[in-house]
Image 1 (cartoon, helix red, strand yellow):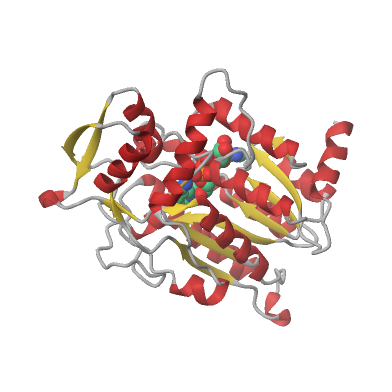
Image 2: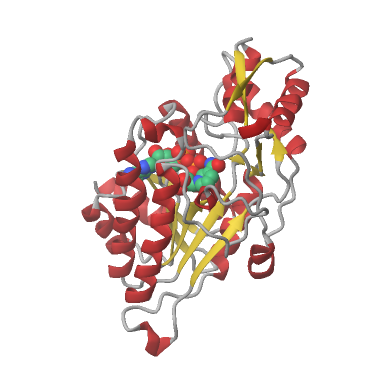
Length: 360
Ligand code: NAD
C-alpha cells in the first residue's frame, strides 16, 4: 500500500501547467489514449479502472502496460467504491477528472442490463459525489454519447436536438447521466462538461465494435452481417478517429471553468456544457467494409441482414460547430486514413510471436 501511494503521488504530480487529472476507465480504449496524451504533454495523470471482462482482459492489461511504461499508474478499483475515491482525492489535489469509465456497447444491455445502471448511473453519481466533496473541487469532463440522440431523425445532430427517444438502455443511462450532471452543477457548483462521442475507432480499439470484429472475421474468412435499415435504408455511422477525440477531450479539459462549490452563485456560476465530438461525415457500413477489404487485401464474405431491434440506430451524423467554436475542435482524419492506422496496429498486435509492445 505504501509503495502504491508513492506511485500514485508520482504519477499524478502536476507539471508546469499545474494540471493533475484522475482518468477513470484508463485501461479502456479512449481512456488509455487520453491518459497517455495528457502525460506526454507533462500533466499529472492517475488512472482508475476495474478491468472488467466485458471484452478481452489481456487487451486492457496491454494498454495498462503501455501507460505504466509512460509513467501513468493505473489503480485497480471500481468507480462505485466511494471510500477508494475519497482516499485518492485525499492523497492528490486533482484539478480535473476525466471520467471515461462506463459500460459501453448497446447490444450487451439485453444480456446484462444491471451493468449499465451500476457503471453509468450509480458510477457517475459516485464520481460526482467524490468530486463535490474534494478540496479543491476538480472540474469534471465525462463521456456521454451520440446515442442520446436515439430515434431523432433530424440530421445532422445538434446539441439542442431532442434526446427524449433513446433506442437502448445504454443511451438511456447516458441521457440520465446528462441530467445527473445538471443536478451536481446546480446544487454543488461543479464544473461539468459532457462529450457526446460519435463511434470512435482506431489503434488499441474495442473488440466489440463493428470495424474491429469485421477485421477479425474478414481475415479468418468468417461471414460478416451488414445491417440494412427499415425500407432498405443505408446504415451509416459518423466514424471518428481516436486522435480527434483525444484532441477534443483535452480541449474540453483546458477550457473547463473552475468548480465554484456549494453556493457557487456568489462566486459566479460553474460551467455546465455538452458538446458533440464527431467527424461530420457519415459513412455507410458497406463502405467501411470496402475500405477494410482493400487494406486487408481480402474479400469479405457478406450477408445483408435486416437490422434487428437491438438498440442500434440506423444513422448518426454530428454537427460539431459548437465544439469548433468553443473548443477549437476540428476532426482531421478521414475514415480511409484512420482505418489504415487501425489495421497496421491490429496486424502487429495480433500477429503470433510478436511482443505486444507499441505506443498509445
Ligand atoms: P472501454 O470499454 O474500452 O473503456 C471503459 C473502461 O472503463 C474499461 O476499461 C472498463 O474496464 C472500465 N470500467 C467500466 N466500468 C467500470 C467501473 N464500474 N469502475 C471502474 N472502471 C470501469 O470503452 P471506450 O470505448 O473507451 O469508452 C470510453 C467512454 O466513452 C465510455 O463512457 C463510453 O460510454 C463512451 N463512448 C464511447 C464511444 C466509442 O465509440 N468508443 C462512443 C460514445 C461514447
